Amino acid sequence: MTIHQLKRDLGLIDAVGVGLGAVIGAGIFVVTGVAAGQAGPAFLLGLLVAGFAATCNGLSSAQLAAVYPQAGGTYEYGYRLLNPWMGFAAGWMFLASKLAAGGVVALGFGTYLAALVPGINPKVAAVVAVLVLMLANLFGIKKAGKLNLVIVGVTVCSLVYFVFAGIPSFNIENLKPFAPNGWRSVAEASALLFFAFTGYARIATLGEEVHEPKKTIPRAVIITLVASVILYTAVALVAVGAVGASALGSTGSPLGVAAGSFKVPGVAWVIGVAGITAMLGVSLSQLLGISRMMFAMARKHDLPPFLQAVHARFGVPHWGILLTGGIIMLLAWFGTLPFVVAAASFTILLYYSIANIAAYKMEKADRMFPQWVPVAGLVACLAMAASLKWETIASGLVLLAVGFVWRVVYRWLARVNNQ
Image (tube, rainbow, N blue to C red):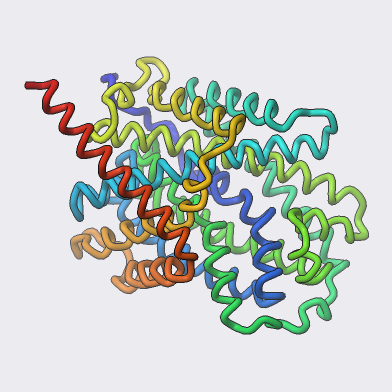
């Protein structure tokens, strides 16, 4: 094996597991309540709109990944089909948003664990969890994939149990009035809920480690999105039907509040476990995706060359994994940069906008889906971006400008050193 070649060790089930592990996280456990408080029971429609937008984006990513099954996802597509600056913008924004989110998610795990096991320090738990996941990543993508399947399996089974346990407590009167804050609030809720679906792109980022990527990646993206939309809708419907939108919107743990009202005992504890495993799954997928993005960007000389090194035995970008894990542990312990977290909404929309533009530019023979799919995905991204606060957009543009300055300076220094 050459020093820059990754191992193809992931099958369809593994790829779907990576997608579900990235999607089923803070969105269903936290954002559901925020959206319910904003739009009332009509947030359920916002969830379906968000699912449609995510599906269009997902199909664009899927057909791109089938033709260009390389690590880096949209970074690679932007380079090939648009121009290097667009590709770099996608990669830089991905790294910034996911690294910032990594610290938040790791601390979220620690907080959930401390709620179930009093006396545990959330920061210590977060750092230990990232360290364990980092070590699992270092021993090969296959082992990391199997661990991810276990984590995702516990999360999904817990949420399915939540749905069936909550059906007897469902009261249709809790869905009235359906849209108390008007239909504009539903649009705002859909923009908020869109971010609950965005992890599916992690599958495309691992394009060089999937068996038969032209078949496996599109199937994995579609299965992930369909399963996520169905599960999210069922969980949200049962939750709002059990306690009402106001109760969900008034707490930071809406599923815990809903579970506490169920007649079936022990559901709140099960949801606590699901919150822990969901945060673990997202953390693991972030370690996978960020390290592979670093690998791809180093290969094209946008990041230092040591990040494209691949371990001779385990076939993973070990320096990228170590750097990613180290940064996330520091962020979990000391806190992240507020303006980077604020910019996350804008950065991820820019990432998917570039993916849709690249999909639109594909050769006709390479397309798997009609041209309206990337157009709809792009329009959805732009509409959601327009709904963001100007401070969020400004933070994202500043972050992008910092990235462009980095690229210019880094490449200039590389040329000087090579002369």
